[in-house]
Image (cartoon, rainbow, N blue to C red; front, side, top):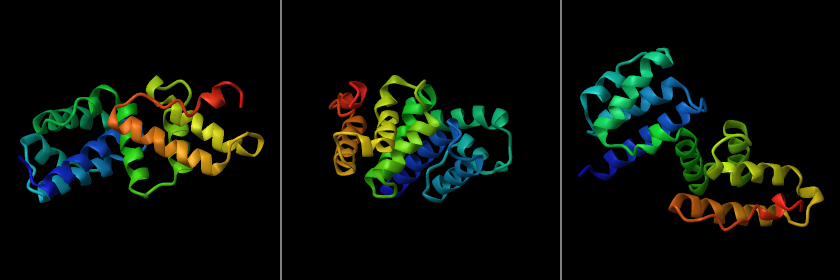
Length: 172
């Protein structure tokens, strides 16, 4: 079982890959995360190779290596299978740690997932629209911040949505 530093480094790699997959992070972020894994004593053949890649390497060449490293490390397949959900998870964790505001996390979802993206992520896309129109709505920024926190907690825990954007869908 990896120690805390190793687990943190592995989580950071997973997050970097998820963000890279939706083009919200660079190859450099993924390579740097692979290096950080090695520094934290997380190791695998593909991870070593990934850590040695140029950050300017093409996505076409990096993608199979990234998948192999994730497989060797046993990182959750959702990072590979559903990059939008994995990337949103990374962003929501940053939000919950206070690295992003609620409105910035919602804006990220609107930009990188959009209205045509994964259905499970649409709540956070809607929140961006709700923040944009708050001056004309029956709710406040404080309401949105509270609802965003509730929805984020539910999403990260794998629970059903509390339905906080239903008011938006009904035409506020």
